[in-house]
Image 1 (spheres, rainbow, N blue to C red):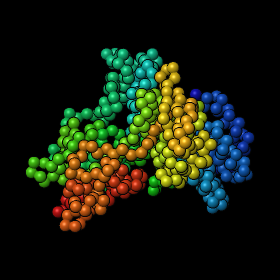
Image 2 (tube, rainbow, N blue to C red; image 1 turned 90 degrees about the vertical axis):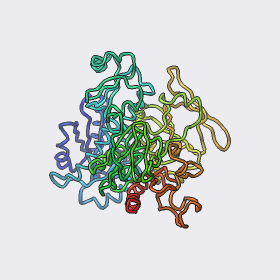
Image 3 (tube, one colour; image 1 turned 60 degrees about the vertical axis):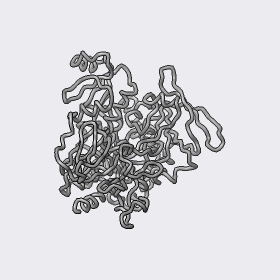
Image 4 (cartoon, helix red, strand yellow; image 1 turned 135 degrees about the vertical axis):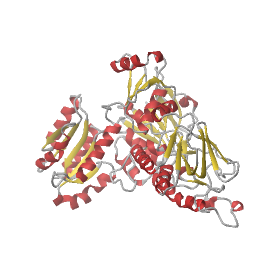
Length: 553
């Protein structure tokens, strides 16, 4: 297989576009087509010879009907490729009106003004983002930071791959008898027979029994959390709210520690593409957003401890600050932000619980989607996470069905996602439906599902090789003391949602303050939150002013 291709279709601007894309020729196979027929023939040749197509660049200088046919054809032929429309400056205002709906519906990934000369870095920044996302979600890694050796991709192996995808670390799975497998096992023969074996470029190699062990190997496992001072703020949970609080608190000089039980980014880190986040007109994956925020917080001095979930919180002996407990040690802090987010609710179907990791997944499981090319996939859920998971899966699967109990998606999903789902010919929505049963094939992988109409009780059996369950919020705060009040569903109460008998002198706590002075809550864990990345980020940023107020008392 040769280098991934960039196919450019232009009738009147081949010189300009050829010069602009010359910088990519070292690492991509750049092809120029001057008409629709040539572009189709080029794409067909690439596919039949086993080449991957990373990007289609289509000039708007063609007949509009034929242009839409070309764009639709690229989507059918290579659904994993990114699609870019470029327009000459003389047509930009007109084309912006013509194609804005196509961009909003996901028919194309971006509309850009054609480069007007050399070093148009704004143009190349956008192209680089498209290629970057393609490489992260589709391409086989050229350099594998982590190699997993296993005879088969069992549930644990897939969990390891999913974790590595969430933290942005390229990885590959190899059979023990492969060339790579034999090379790795030669470095750690004592672990042969205990699968999977994991090796990294950092030099360590050995059997990996669970995801937490992998996290400890990647980020280091201190015997004790090394914080020997009373810090200003400890953030529990590194989702969008926790990351925003870490950035703003540490940038304002507050000593800040962030504890994360799993992967930086939380559930948001599993989103394949967030298109409505402020400042990213072409969208950004949850993983990249989280890793950028982590780097930003590190720059200002936040200390991160990954792989150590909080197990409790108490007052110190003299009562002047809080102590957050973990299995790796305690962190003493004057204030605490609880931003542990939520987990997905379990489906509760025993036959499917037994297939978790073998075609059944809780969450988006982006790495697993690649393995479902040509298969039928079912996504259960009606929120934005479910919509994003379905769109990502449709790049690989032959068909995707979104199953929701509600009559439609409008009450729980953003309009831009609904529009993109309605346009995508590979995705269908089954409202008023639930999954009630499922079973495996001869090798133990998911093979079929039973769907039930919630109104009539009628059932239908469908063939499915993948089931992604994004069933809504189950709060992660069982470690909190009872003095931190929660609502009937377990979400933390803050501000005016706190019962009046817990107000002080008739005044409610501050908006993000809990019933325990000095403990705040933000993001999805908070009762009444919007369950959106942007709102969680805003809460994480705004809580810092309340922390300042508390510290100043």
